[in-house]
Image (cartoon, rainbow, N blue to C red):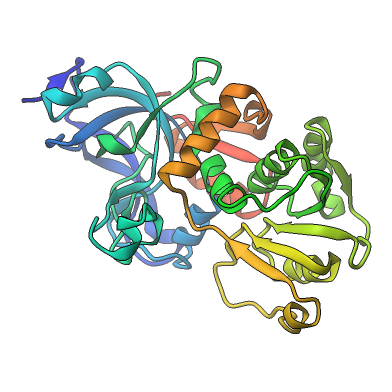
Length: 342
């Protein structure tokens, strides 16, 4: 039996990837998704535009069309498919991105559902959050702390991805000199998490990134648009998804240091891989998020060690998604958030 708050509309507006290329993305009308046992329907308050959405639009990230895009979701639970889950109704939540994993492979059994070969995620293989409502497993819900607003709550998911890269295990020690390449939202989050670990953080960008770098300075990082010191950093966090920035990071990390890949390139890139050997570097990363990284993200939010609000630089309704996607492709602002209920 379904337990419901009032929903009167049977159809809704949504951003759908229907065919190849950016021209295959459109704002259209789809059915409000059904709620089955074990699932919850969430009235979407906000969904952030992620670099992965850009990659999906350009066919640089796997997807199954037609699919409603968007996975950085926050909203309110309005319907559940099982009476056992009724306590979730009315709660403000952020959402893990997985819709289904096999739960039987060695990765699922080890708590690493993010690496399941058959994983189906929101926004690429299952209908996501660029819509008025989204349906997903109850097990993937996380209650949003009272101190976090609806719109900035959309950044809880990318924060969980960053904590997956940086906290499991911790890659920064107190006093480490940390370089962050890329002043976008992922770079801003990575810089804050690195500072929470005691790192002395420098963020690098291009002259055109002045406004983004100013936000990083307000949040406690040093910034530069100049060439950084070769071998001057204990840890480098590559957050731009740019091959050129990754090359800078390989040059900047000291011998015996650590390189962490946070951003997604979306295509093959050329890197100075011999530096891994010459410098005896440790190379790590983290794909998507896990329940553990979500718990860490929520603790950082609750403690005030990470600030999400300053990263939201634009809010748009669903109807303006094409323009907002183009802005994301051009690297404008930090985080554009789609607010479907406007």
